[in-house]
Length: 109
Ligand SMILES: [Zn+2]
Ligand SMILES: [Zn+2]
Ligand SMILES: [Zn+2]
Ligand SMILES: [Zn+2]
Figure 1 (tube, rainbow, N blue to C red):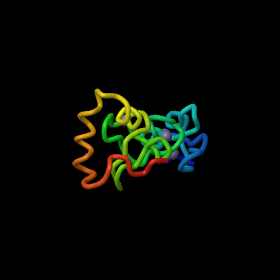
Figure 2: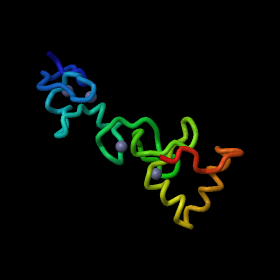
Figure 3: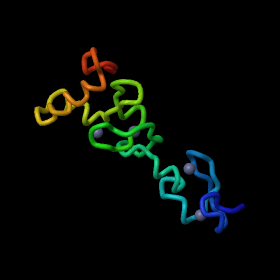
């Protein structure tokens, strides 16, 4: 069985996320293949990211981010700063352009 990433080396294991067969070069210490590692949430490093934080640009998964609008997410860290940190006030105006006619906080979890 060849590694499904490079298709050159013999696979040694399967990625625990996508179940691809991968060689030792393409398997990380966390049991994930190089493809999954690239799209992993940059906050928890556990789950696949589904979007980028609108503010800091980090890849975030569903549980590490707050959905302001469909397809518009911010990570939890930026979200709490948005609410409390005055240096983030410029982003509030920025976000309001996306969230017309609604309060900034929509899906409060
Ligand atoms: Zn490989
Ligand atoms: Zn994988
Ligand atoms: Zn996460
Ligand atoms: Zn962020």
